[in-house]
Length: 288
Image 1 (tube, rainbow, N blue to C red):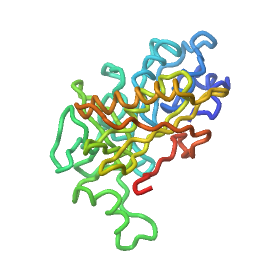
Image 2: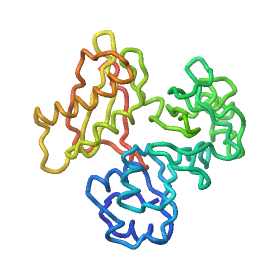
Image 3: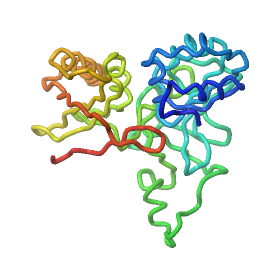
């Protein structure tokens, strides 16, 4: 896993020069923001595939790979889990790579996207499910003799159907977009929004290295609160705050199809908590 923590370390690029690289969306975005262009500093002619996992790879990440790393590489955005030792959706070397999309379901995986009432949906956001058993499915948890925790983790949402906890969407090309974890989705005005959609907008601002969006109960609704980690020496002044809020609110307006009367508050987060895969840890602020 070539994922940091420092994108400027040449050892990561040297691994890629040997023919393949496994990284994640956060790392590629950090490389892009630092202005790294490995295609101009290293011989990457042997590089045939880049697999990106751990966090959603935004459309801008695809642009960066093909413009600054290798224009003739198979970029395989993949998504699965440590628990299944596999991928539900992944790359396919026989089909085209579409900007911002994961190419196809994995072999042996009856993957689908279901609405909240358990119906398959297309070109709509919903829950990533696997409707049939698969070869690497875990059968139990340790210290869970009656399998209560196991069933609560995967089968409580839709009885008898594996619900992985990802907020996903089929595309017109038969690929998939992962919009974030279901437990991290926001619900302003009763409309579910994947946090990855907000990050893809806010993190295009050069001064913003990362963003963390959470939902907060507010005046009989849920408002989006945005925390940003800024580049060294950058101050969160009124201008930057306004730019960040406009980016965040543009997502809310688009998915909700109506104006937002409550502007997202912005706060600086110098060092957000981080998971092992480099994703920022989030938790609900409901009731706080």
